[in-house]
Length: 358
Image 1 (cartoon, one colour):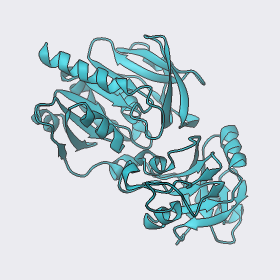
Image 2: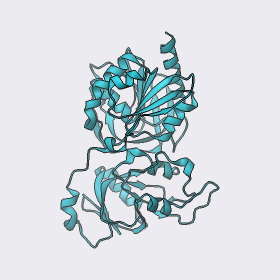
Image 3: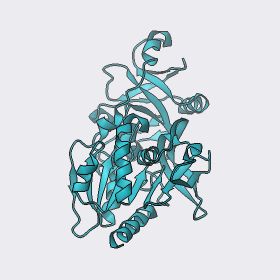
Image 4: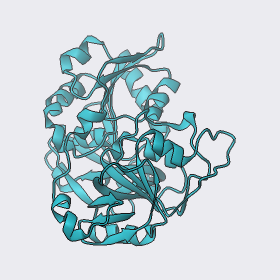
Protein backbone atom coordinates (compact mmCIF):
# COMPACT_ATOMS: atom_id res chain seq x y z
CA UNK A 1 0.00 0.00 0.00
CA UNK A 2 1.18 3.54 -0.64
CA UNK A 3 0.38 7.10 0.33
CA UNK A 4 0.81 9.58 -2.50
CA UNK A 5 0.97 13.24 -1.50
CA UNK A 6 0.17 16.23 -3.69
CA UNK A 7 3.82 17.28 -3.25
CA UNK A 8 4.83 14.21 -5.27
CA UNK A 9 6.20 12.34 -2.26
CA UNK A 10 5.28 8.66 -2.04
CA UNK A 11 5.45 6.67 1.22
CA UNK A 12 5.01 2.91 1.41
CA UNK A 13 3.35 0.81 4.09
CA UNK A 14 0.93 -2.05 4.68
CA UNK A 15 -2.84 -2.13 4.73
CA UNK A 16 -5.09 -2.87 7.72
CA UNK A 17 -8.66 -2.05 8.60
CA UNK A 18 -11.37 -1.85 5.97
CA UNK A 19 -10.59 -3.10 2.48
CA UNK A 20 -10.29 -0.09 0.18
CA UNK A 21 -12.90 -0.31 -2.60
CA UNK A 22 -11.18 2.65 -4.21
CA UNK A 23 -8.35 5.07 -3.44
CA UNK A 24 -8.91 7.11 -0.27
CA UNK A 25 -8.63 10.87 -0.89
CA UNK A 26 -8.36 13.40 1.94
CA UNK A 27 -6.32 16.03 3.75
CA UNK A 28 -3.34 14.45 5.53
CA UNK A 29 -2.78 15.74 9.09
CA UNK A 30 -0.91 14.53 12.17
CA UNK A 31 -1.83 14.22 15.83
CA UNK A 32 0.84 14.11 18.56
CA UNK A 33 -1.25 12.52 21.34
CA UNK A 34 0.44 9.57 23.04
CA UNK A 35 -2.90 8.04 24.04
CA UNK A 36 -6.57 8.59 23.26
CA UNK A 37 -6.52 7.33 19.68
CA UNK A 38 -10.15 6.18 19.87
CA UNK A 39 -11.31 9.64 20.92
CA UNK A 40 -9.24 11.14 18.10
CA UNK A 41 -10.63 8.78 15.46
CA UNK A 42 -14.24 9.41 16.56
CA UNK A 43 -13.94 13.22 16.79
CA UNK A 44 -16.21 14.70 14.05
CA UNK A 45 -13.68 17.51 13.57
CA UNK A 46 -11.53 15.08 11.54
CA UNK A 47 -14.18 14.77 8.82
CA UNK A 48 -12.55 14.14 5.40
CA UNK A 49 -9.05 13.92 6.88
CA UNK A 50 -6.44 11.17 6.86
CA UNK A 51 -5.06 11.17 10.41
CA UNK A 52 -1.45 10.25 11.13
CA UNK A 53 -0.58 9.37 14.73
CA UNK A 54 2.99 10.38 15.59
CA UNK A 55 3.19 8.05 18.61
CA UNK A 56 4.72 4.85 17.20
CA UNK A 57 2.42 2.19 18.74
CA UNK A 58 -1.34 2.56 18.35
CA UNK A 59 -4.08 0.12 19.33
CA UNK A 60 -2.38 -1.49 22.33
CA UNK A 61 -5.35 -1.00 24.68
CA UNK A 62 -8.03 -1.68 22.08
CA UNK A 63 -11.43 -0.03 21.65
CA UNK A 64 -14.07 0.53 24.35
CA UNK A 65 -17.73 1.43 23.89
CA UNK A 66 -17.26 4.02 26.66
CA UNK A 67 -14.74 6.11 24.74
CA UNK A 68 -16.51 7.10 21.54
CA UNK A 69 -16.80 10.85 20.93
CA UNK A 70 -19.36 10.23 18.18
CA UNK A 71 -21.16 7.11 17.01
CA UNK A 72 -20.09 7.42 13.37
CA UNK A 73 -16.44 8.35 12.72
CA UNK A 74 -16.08 10.88 9.91
CA UNK A 75 -12.37 10.67 9.12
CA UNK A 76 -11.21 9.21 5.80
CA UNK A 77 -8.20 7.13 6.87
CA UNK A 78 -5.75 6.23 9.63
CA UNK A 79 -1.95 6.05 9.37
CA UNK A 80 0.25 4.56 12.12
CA UNK A 81 3.81 3.31 12.45
CA UNK A 82 2.75 0.10 14.21
CA UNK A 83 -0.71 -1.13 15.13
CA UNK A 84 -1.30 -3.70 17.85
CA UNK A 85 -3.45 -6.64 16.66
CA UNK A 86 -3.74 -8.14 20.18
CA UNK A 87 -4.69 -5.33 22.59
CA UNK A 88 -4.69 -5.84 26.36
CA UNK A 89 -6.90 -3.76 28.65
CA UNK A 90 -9.77 -4.52 31.03
CA UNK A 91 -12.12 -2.27 29.02
CA UNK A 92 -11.07 -3.61 25.62
CA UNK A 93 -13.99 -4.82 23.46
CA UNK A 94 -12.41 -4.95 20.02
CA UNK A 95 -9.10 -4.31 18.29
CA UNK A 96 -8.29 -1.18 16.30
CA UNK A 97 -8.35 -3.29 13.14
CA UNK A 98 -11.87 -4.54 13.95
CA UNK A 99 -12.99 -0.97 14.71
CA UNK A 100 -11.74 0.28 11.33
CA UNK A 101 -13.40 -2.62 9.50
CA UNK A 102 -16.68 -1.99 11.35
CA UNK A 103 -16.72 1.67 10.33
CA UNK A 104 -15.33 1.11 6.82
CA UNK A 105 -12.18 3.13 7.48
CA UNK A 106 -8.97 2.25 5.65
CA UNK A 107 -5.80 2.00 7.72
CA UNK A 108 -2.11 1.96 6.84
CA UNK A 109 0.75 0.75 9.04
CA UNK A 110 4.50 0.12 8.79
CA UNK A 111 4.89 3.57 7.27
CA UNK A 112 7.58 6.08 8.24
CA UNK A 113 5.30 8.39 10.24
CA UNK A 114 8.26 10.50 11.39
CA UNK A 115 9.16 11.30 7.79
CA UNK A 116 5.53 12.01 6.94
CA UNK A 117 5.14 14.35 9.91
CA UNK A 118 8.29 16.25 8.97
CA UNK A 119 7.00 16.64 5.40
CA UNK A 120 3.74 18.12 6.70
CA UNK A 121 5.56 20.44 9.10
CA UNK A 122 7.85 21.68 6.31
CA UNK A 123 5.27 22.03 3.52
CA UNK A 124 1.97 22.33 5.38
CA UNK A 125 -1.02 20.02 5.34
CA UNK A 126 -1.44 18.34 1.97
CA UNK A 127 -4.01 16.32 0.10
CA UNK A 128 -3.11 12.68 -0.15
CA UNK A 129 -4.24 9.42 -1.69
CA UNK A 130 -4.09 6.04 0.06
CA UNK A 131 -4.15 3.25 -2.49
CA UNK A 132 -3.31 -0.41 -3.02
CA UNK A 133 -3.17 0.09 -6.81
CA UNK A 134 0.10 0.07 -8.71
CA UNK A 135 0.02 3.76 -9.65
CA UNK A 136 2.50 6.63 -9.68
CA UNK A 137 2.17 10.29 -8.76
CA UNK A 138 1.76 11.14 -12.43
CA UNK A 139 -1.16 8.72 -12.66
CA UNK A 140 -3.08 10.44 -9.84
CA UNK A 141 -1.82 14.01 -10.16
CA UNK A 142 -5.13 15.24 -11.57
CA UNK A 143 -7.09 13.61 -8.77
CA UNK A 144 -4.83 15.17 -6.15
CA UNK A 145 -5.37 18.61 -7.69
CA UNK A 146 -9.12 18.44 -6.99
CA UNK A 147 -10.57 20.60 -4.26
CA UNK A 148 -11.75 18.96 -1.06
CA UNK A 149 -15.45 19.17 -0.13
CA UNK A 150 -16.66 22.16 1.89
CA UNK A 151 -19.84 20.67 3.39
CA UNK A 152 -18.30 18.90 6.39
CA UNK A 153 -20.40 20.66 9.04
CA UNK A 154 -23.78 19.96 7.36
CA UNK A 155 -22.74 16.30 7.07
CA UNK A 156 -21.65 15.75 10.70
CA UNK A 157 -24.13 18.03 12.48
CA UNK A 158 -27.28 16.65 14.10
CA UNK A 159 -30.27 16.35 11.79
CA UNK A 160 -32.83 16.60 14.60
CA UNK A 161 -33.28 18.44 17.88
CA UNK A 162 -32.34 16.40 20.97
CA UNK A 163 -33.22 17.11 24.60
CA UNK A 164 -31.08 15.88 27.52
CA UNK A 165 -33.29 16.91 30.45
CA UNK A 166 -32.11 17.88 33.91
CA UNK A 167 -35.08 19.07 35.96
CA UNK A 168 -34.39 22.41 37.57
CA UNK A 169 -31.11 22.93 35.74
CA UNK A 170 -30.26 25.99 33.70
CA UNK A 171 -31.11 25.36 30.06
CA UNK A 172 -28.34 25.51 27.47
CA UNK A 173 -28.94 25.20 23.75
CA UNK A 174 -25.86 23.74 22.07
CA UNK A 175 -25.53 24.50 18.37
CA UNK A 176 -23.98 21.39 16.88
CA UNK A 177 -21.23 22.00 14.33
CA UNK A 178 -19.91 18.47 14.98
CA UNK A 179 -19.85 18.22 18.76
CA UNK A 180 -17.84 15.75 20.82
CA UNK A 181 -19.72 13.64 23.35
CA UNK A 182 -17.64 14.94 26.25
CA UNK A 183 -18.77 18.53 25.68
CA UNK A 184 -22.32 17.33 26.29
CA UNK A 185 -21.17 15.22 29.27
CA UNK A 186 -19.32 18.21 30.75
CA UNK A 187 -22.49 20.31 30.60
CA UNK A 188 -24.70 17.56 32.05
CA UNK A 189 -22.27 16.95 34.94
CA UNK A 190 -22.81 20.56 35.98
CA UNK A 191 -26.57 20.20 36.07
CA UNK A 192 -27.41 21.92 32.80
CA UNK A 193 -30.58 21.01 30.96
CA UNK A 194 -29.23 20.64 27.40
CA UNK A 195 -30.91 20.87 24.01
CA UNK A 196 -28.75 20.06 20.98
CA UNK A 197 -29.83 21.64 17.70
CA UNK A 198 -28.52 21.43 14.09
CA UNK A 199 -25.93 23.92 12.88
CA UNK A 200 -28.42 26.01 10.86
CA UNK A 201 -31.17 26.35 13.47
CA UNK A 202 -32.68 29.84 13.39
CA UNK A 203 -32.60 32.39 16.18
CA UNK A 204 -36.39 32.15 16.50
CA UNK A 205 -36.30 28.37 16.95
CA UNK A 206 -33.61 28.64 19.61
CA UNK A 207 -35.44 31.48 21.35
CA UNK A 208 -38.57 29.29 21.56
CA UNK A 209 -36.65 26.92 23.85
CA UNK A 210 -36.20 29.77 26.39
CA UNK A 211 -32.51 29.07 26.96
CA UNK A 212 -30.45 30.46 29.79
CA UNK A 213 -27.24 30.10 27.79
CA UNK A 214 -25.80 29.14 24.41
CA UNK A 215 -22.96 26.72 23.60
CA UNK A 216 -21.22 26.76 20.21
CA UNK A 217 -19.55 23.40 19.64
CA UNK A 218 -16.45 22.23 17.83
CA UNK A 219 -16.63 20.99 14.23
CA UNK A 220 -14.68 20.32 11.03
CA UNK A 221 -13.58 22.41 8.08
CA UNK A 222 -13.37 26.12 7.36
CA UNK A 223 -15.64 28.40 9.47
CA UNK A 224 -16.14 30.65 6.45
CA UNK A 225 -18.02 27.84 4.69
CA UNK A 226 -21.06 28.47 6.92
CA UNK A 227 -21.21 32.25 7.06
CA UNK A 228 -25.01 32.10 6.93
CA UNK A 229 -24.99 31.30 10.68
CA UNK A 230 -23.20 34.52 11.65
CA UNK A 231 -26.32 36.75 11.97
CA UNK A 232 -27.88 34.12 14.25
CA UNK A 233 -24.80 34.07 16.50
CA UNK A 234 -24.79 37.86 16.60
CA UNK A 235 -28.43 37.88 17.73
CA UNK A 236 -27.89 35.17 20.32
CA UNK A 237 -24.97 36.90 22.04
CA UNK A 238 -27.07 40.03 22.45
CA UNK A 239 -29.60 38.12 24.54
CA UNK A 240 -27.92 35.11 26.17
CA UNK A 241 -24.59 34.18 27.80
CA UNK A 242 -22.48 32.32 25.26
CA UNK A 243 -19.55 29.88 25.46
CA UNK A 244 -17.81 28.74 22.26
CA UNK A 245 -15.26 25.97 21.70
CA UNK A 246 -12.88 25.42 18.73
CA UNK A 247 -15.00 25.83 15.55
CA UNK A 248 -17.50 27.69 17.72
CA UNK A 249 -14.69 30.05 18.78
CA UNK A 250 -13.88 30.83 15.16
CA UNK A 251 -17.55 31.39 14.27
CA UNK A 252 -17.92 33.64 17.34
CA UNK A 253 -14.96 35.68 16.07
CA UNK A 254 -16.35 35.95 12.54
CA UNK A 255 -19.77 37.00 13.87
CA UNK A 256 -18.09 39.91 15.65
CA UNK A 257 -16.17 41.19 12.63
CA UNK A 258 -12.83 39.39 13.09
CA UNK A 259 -11.20 37.17 10.47
CA UNK A 260 -9.81 33.62 10.32
CA UNK A 261 -7.03 32.01 8.31
CA UNK A 262 -5.81 28.52 7.49
CA UNK A 263 -2.78 27.44 9.50
CA UNK A 264 0.26 25.77 7.94
CA UNK A 265 -0.26 22.44 9.68
CA UNK A 266 -2.64 23.24 12.54
CA UNK A 267 -2.65 22.13 16.15
CA UNK A 268 -3.59 18.50 16.80
CA UNK A 269 -2.48 16.93 20.05
CA UNK A 270 -2.91 16.83 23.82
CA UNK A 271 0.05 18.87 25.06
CA UNK A 272 -0.30 22.44 23.75
CA UNK A 273 0.67 25.16 26.27
CA UNK A 274 -1.72 28.11 26.49
CA UNK A 275 -1.11 31.35 28.42
CA UNK A 276 -4.15 32.85 30.13
CA UNK A 277 -3.34 36.57 29.91
CA UNK A 278 -5.93 37.61 32.49
CA UNK A 279 -4.96 35.10 35.18
CA UNK A 280 -1.29 34.88 34.19
CA UNK A 281 -1.47 31.10 34.22
CA UNK A 282 -0.36 28.43 31.76
CA UNK A 283 -2.56 25.45 30.89
CA UNK A 284 -1.68 22.30 28.98
CA UNK A 285 -4.50 21.78 26.51
CA UNK A 286 -5.98 19.36 24.01
CA UNK A 287 -6.30 20.81 20.50
CA UNK A 288 -7.59 19.91 17.07
CA UNK A 289 -7.93 22.70 14.54
CA UNK A 290 -6.54 23.79 11.20
CA UNK A 291 -7.79 27.39 11.23
CA UNK A 292 -7.15 30.27 13.63
CA UNK A 293 -8.42 33.79 14.29
CA UNK A 294 -6.13 36.51 12.91
CA UNK A 295 -4.95 38.74 15.75
CA UNK A 296 -4.77 41.91 13.65
CA UNK A 297 -8.40 41.42 12.66
CA UNK A 298 -9.48 42.03 16.28
CA UNK A 299 -8.75 45.75 15.87
CA UNK A 300 -12.00 47.72 15.77
CA UNK A 301 -14.11 44.81 17.03
CA UNK A 302 -15.79 44.28 20.40
CA UNK A 303 -13.54 41.30 21.14
CA UNK A 304 -10.68 41.12 23.65
CA UNK A 305 -7.77 38.69 23.39
CA UNK A 306 -7.63 36.59 26.57
CA UNK A 307 -5.34 33.61 25.81
CA UNK A 308 -2.49 32.78 23.43
CA UNK A 309 -0.62 29.66 22.37
CA UNK A 310 2.92 29.68 23.77
CA UNK A 311 4.33 27.73 20.82
CA UNK A 312 3.31 30.05 17.98
CA UNK A 313 1.46 32.96 19.70
CA UNK A 314 -1.79 32.15 17.89
CA UNK A 315 -5.09 33.17 19.50
CA UNK A 316 -6.51 30.68 22.00
CA UNK A 317 -9.17 32.73 23.80
CA UNK A 318 -11.51 35.68 23.29
CA UNK A 319 -14.24 37.49 25.17
CA UNK A 320 -16.76 40.17 24.29
CA UNK A 321 -16.15 43.61 25.73
CA UNK A 322 -19.70 44.15 26.98
CA UNK A 323 -21.63 40.88 26.60
CA UNK A 324 -21.30 37.69 28.73
CA UNK A 325 -19.76 35.81 25.82
CA UNK A 326 -16.38 34.09 25.62
CA UNK A 327 -14.55 31.44 23.61
CA UNK A 328 -11.52 29.16 23.53
CA UNK A 329 -9.78 27.60 20.55
CA UNK A 330 -8.74 24.45 22.43
CA UNK A 331 -10.87 21.68 23.96
CA UNK A 332 -11.56 22.18 27.69
CA UNK A 333 -13.54 18.91 27.70
CA UNK A 334 -10.36 17.19 26.41
CA UNK A 335 -10.83 13.43 25.76
CA UNK A 336 -8.08 12.79 24.98
CA UNK A 337 -6.01 15.23 26.94
CA UNK A 338 -5.37 17.04 30.21
CA UNK A 339 -8.06 18.36 32.53
CA UNK A 340 -6.43 21.73 33.25
CA UNK A 341 -9.29 23.76 31.76
CA UNK A 342 -12.38 21.83 32.91
CA UNK A 343 -13.05 24.86 35.13
CA UNK A 344 -14.27 26.81 32.09
CA UNK A 345 -17.56 24.89 32.23
CA UNK A 346 -17.90 25.97 35.88
CA UNK A 347 -17.23 29.58 34.88
CA UNK A 348 -19.88 29.30 32.18
CA UNK A 349 -22.36 27.95 34.77
CA UNK A 350 -21.61 30.90 37.07
CA UNK A 351 -22.08 33.37 34.22
CA UNK A 352 -25.40 31.77 33.22
CA UNK A 353 -26.68 31.80 36.81
CA UNK A 354 -25.51 35.35 37.37
CA UNK A 355 -27.26 36.55 34.23
CA UNK A 356 -30.41 34.61 35.09
CA UNK A 357 -30.61 36.13 38.57
CA UNK A 358 -29.68 39.67 37.50
